[in-house]
Length: 116
Image (cartoon, rainbow, N blue to C red):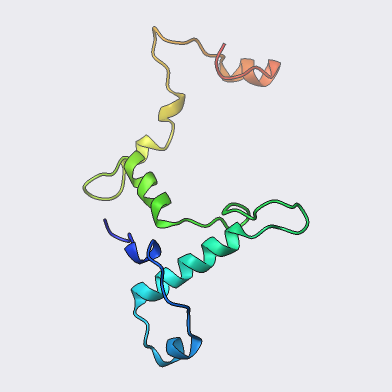
């Protein structure tokens, strides 16, 4: 799988900034160190709340296993771009014999929901 980094799971030797400055680390090694640092930061306890910081928040962290889980659930096409009609409006369509819906006027006048 593209983007999956097995070095994340391995124990890497301690990070040496001097080696990094000399360019002795490969991109894969640097990615592994970055993942280790991010995981350590997510496991830290926040002094204000007393809870782990976690991976959410304003700038959530997406690790390779999260990418893998997303790719497993999502639908991909050969061209890489899904049909725009799948995104725009398909979820609000109804079947004539299906669930009844309130009209736009009913929703505006009564504050009703989409479905009856």
